[in-house]
Image (cartoon, rainbow, N blue to C red):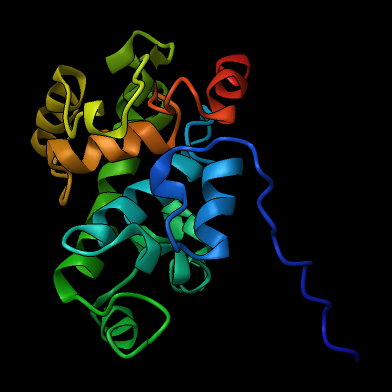
Length: 205
């Protein structure tokens, strides 16, 4: 069987972008900015994926996590909440030997315990995504930042979300982590107004 063809390299054009997307970052980093960051997510599995990835990022760079994203998909059953919630100590020990992810025991154990917390939350309110979106009133918060230095690291909404999830037993869900989660999943549009993705994300919302 022939090897699968690799997708063509992503070559960013000259359209204006948020500064963090450029500056020597990898191809995958720019593609992530152009195709995902800030696009509203209303799917529980995708929300769970970003909870795992944002939690794994704590103390590291987002570029590091993006480079290991396929490894995370393999390690965490393509972010199937029910399967991850069943991971036992033996499976966690195997993941600590898997180079495709950040091999930090606390972060791996948190991913498993968070999966269990998601199932409990779903049993209570029906949907992880709907619950998270309730902290922004069900619609994206649209900011109008003109410079990267204006973009905050937390917000009252991320503070409230963090307090709620911690109360429910979630781990690695500090306000800074959750504000990054909100940015990634389109709960807040923090593209600079001069970025070509700013208006596009408004339409997606």
